[in-house]
Amino acid sequence: NAGVTQTPKFRVLKTGQSMTLLCAQDMNHEYMYWYRQDPGMGLRLIHYSVGEGTTAKGEVPDGYNVSRLKKQNFLLGLESAAPSQTSVYFCASREAGGTYNEQFFGPGTRLTVL
Amino acid sequence: AQKVTQAQTEISVVEKEDVTLDCVYETRDTTYYLFWYKQPPSGELVFLIRRNSFDEQNEISGRYSWNFQKSTSSFNFTITASQVVDSAVYFCALSEAAIRGGSNYKLTFGKGTLLTVNP
Image (cartoon, rainbow over the protein chains, first blue to last red):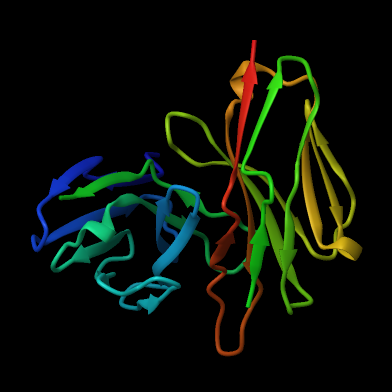
């Protein structure tokens, strides 16, 4: 099993450009999450999904959109990138139910917006 | 609202010293879950431990131990006889329990503690 994978690993964008980050998991998990990590800020939740076809806003959703068309994939889109979106982005997934279950994280995507 | 505070931004120790990382949390839920994750210099997040709010037993795993005290809303992490490979950022996180109409189990993270273990 590959677990949680993220594509790409690194990306540099210019202000105003758009891009999509792909998260894929092969563990048949229901729940998926997108976090961003900024220096001294810990991880903050951007959007999440509790199942295929569902999405919901997290703590810092502005400037991002997401889609969960397939259970194994969770896409994070930036329509018009801004320097404030320079960050490391982590995707995570977890099983449904079993409130004791931990989230499994992908390796992260380092995004720089110039 | 939930909140996790890791007051220690950075800690530096010499190898073989014991070190404790503090974690204080706030929640209005009576049922909740606490986690510790490790982020080594390579950047990935590694799950270390979970604890639910009904289980106040301390846990030991090799050189790692965790002290959960509901009375002080703390979930501290101790590394005994630290090693250079323990150098990493450590995150404490809180997960909300089921909410009305559904569960999302999203994590609220502390800001992390950077632990440097010097040889």
